Length: 113
Length: 119
Image (tube, rainbow over all chains, first blue to last red; front, side, top):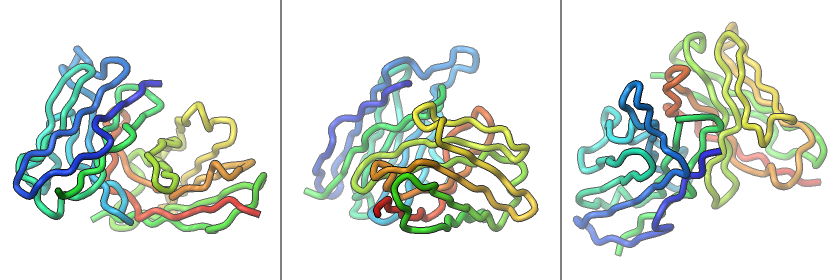
């Protein structure tokens, strides 16, 4: 299984400041045949299911604010919230879909400072 | 827009079989892959498995011996059965849609249903 490790486990950010979440996979999730990284990001608020934010490591889902961006390749990935808003307080998960079983990171909790 | 709704018993006894249904509305079940994911309270997400409309399945090896998924296209429903449950199977169970065989990000998700394993 591909193990996904996120860091940090939690972070506190002031309104308007940048939040950066890291995700590392135990093996590459990059397919050279199509030049794509099989990595996605979700946001989960309390009592709600996860919400898709980004797929192919950097493609924003329709309707997701552009303050959310994804980057990285191979085994190291980053989700950045450029200017944190109150509604962004949530737990964020990365997930690889390179090979089964699809696996998730343990989550990063983003709170307001 | 497509909506998913999980349903089933909220309490299951140890060693028994957990059975859940996911009803899909607002779209056809026939052309997508459908997945089950669970989340123990306060913990992360675990992929259980997926099923295609034609009935083909892929299961997480960690659960494969206990999992059965099925699909009823006439009712727009998919089902999950997990046998020989223990307290470790207590979790919120979600159904979700994947777009295609190789496009295994999940959207949308159901609201989830809490299943507690206890005598």
